[in-house]
Length: 164
Image (cartoon, rainbow, N blue to C red; front, top):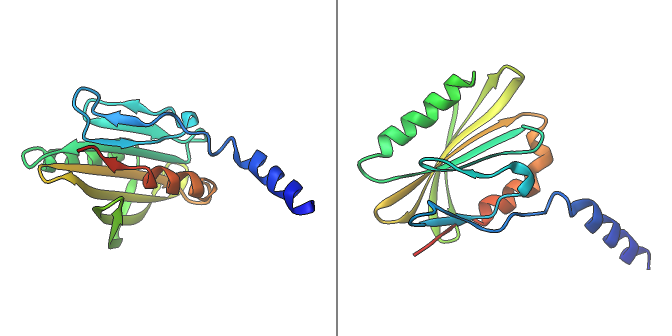
């Protein structure tokens, strides 16, 4: 009985953090990917994809869509966005890795850095949902605060799927 009560209490505590919006398909006019983002993150469609910020502003995430002609500009725009928001990347900390998300290959570039609030984690990832499309994922998280969202973030990235 104690295990059931403990499990119910845990589920109640986690329920607010696991509350997801309906699956967002983007871009809305001709979707190529979908993702579930917590309502509390205020997900919104942008001109080139989607973006969201955790309710405590510890994490910013955007996913922009590119193709062969626009990929360099999309990456440049992501870097410019970070710089305009006071994010300074420590280039000496760059790490590269590869992963797979729902059958899609993902290449990651990660750095440490800082913003006006202190140390941050920064990442740019590349996912190819179709041979002619590229998703550019920009991540910016406050160290010491972003860890509170680990389960949400893993569920969020795990929900990213290609629409064929």
